[in-house]
Image 1 (spheres, helix red, strand yellow):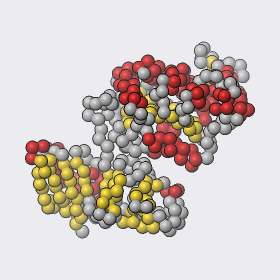
Image 2 (tube, helix red, strand yellow; image 1 turned 90 degrees about the horizontal axis):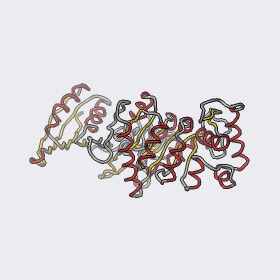
Image 3 (cartoon, one colour; image 1 turned 120 degrees about the horizontal axis):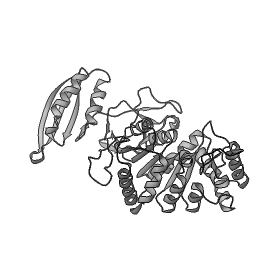
Image 4 (spheres, one colour; image 1 turned 45 degrees about the vertical axis):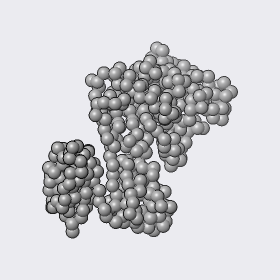
Amino acid sequence: MERIIELHSENINNNILKLIDRTIKQYDGSYRIIKINFEDPDQDKVYIKLAVEAEGDRFDQIRQILTKTKDKAAQTHETTILKPSLKDATAPPDFYSTSNHPTEVFIKGEWLQVKNIRMDALLVLRGGEIYATQLRDIKQGDLIVCTSAGVRVKPGEQNEGSGEFAFMTNEVSSERHVELEVRELAKKMKTIIGRGGKVYVVAGPVVIHTGGMIHFQDIIRKGYVSGLLSGNALAVHDIEFDLLGTSLGIDLNTGNAVPGGHSHHLRAINAVNIAGSIAAAVADGTISSGIMYELVKNDVPFVLAGSIRDDGPLPDTIMDLIRAQEAYTAMIRDADLVIMLSTMLHSIGTGNMLPSYVETVCVDINPAVVNKLVDRGSAQAKGIVTDVGLFLSLLNQNL
């Protein structure tokens, strides 16, 4: 059975015809060109209407590849297939699974923008709108989009080496000039905060271990952090350093283990438990400096997501996984930029929640970790391979 795909290419010189031929033949399909019209001869804009025949899900694969190709949008005018959920937290077997790219669904003659888009979600029709919804949140009777019929995806454009945030283009290299990268990032942060935008930071305990917390505190005080997403460990070792001058029992000035240092993180947790919360410990003077202190004093929100390895935990740490994910999602809903500092676990979790158009910067000393974080399908992901303490020092100098 033939199905229709319509392409609007920005430039006929982009070898769009070769792309069409190669892609369809790759998936053992056949096609015929129904119409080619130049929409704007001066700019080489062209409209192409194809009749494509391919077996099984190969048509969907062909359509997705053509959709994701730069300088055009592929559209299908098929009827969207909606099926009800028969049980909470379940969906029909052929449900559509989202990417993190902006997505639209064709409903009753119009394209509806999917709300709260994120990867690995389902599409649910509620109240005349389409929502990206996690499987666990599906309720019996929800109308769920099935197959890719009537769905179109619009991948974000990558920067082309110009503009205010073009210092990286989904590339990772430890050979790039770190000072230049940080300087350009600082300019971007100033622009975002200056117009009332939001910059969120996802950070791990390495920020403390490398001595980067001194610079991070300054960045918070300067107003460049809209919120912090982290785990139990960063807060624990930040408070440990404030109370006892160590991180993981190590004196950061000398690099030496101190007597009894193995218990310091537990003593820090105990002190906060006595106060009742991190904010209460700041209020009563138990905590007098550090990242958590600056967050509380400057009314910057934070979310601490717990894990199976956590000691304590701190009373502020959310040990319910679902509640922690929901709190992360709620915080970054309005993000313009997310900076991820040496925490693969929390960074990947956050990246899964972000639309592809949100710019992210991933910083780690390990190139393999940065590659894994950058290669998440975002058109605006940047990677900086360097020591996170050095990175924060340079960033603070440029803000």
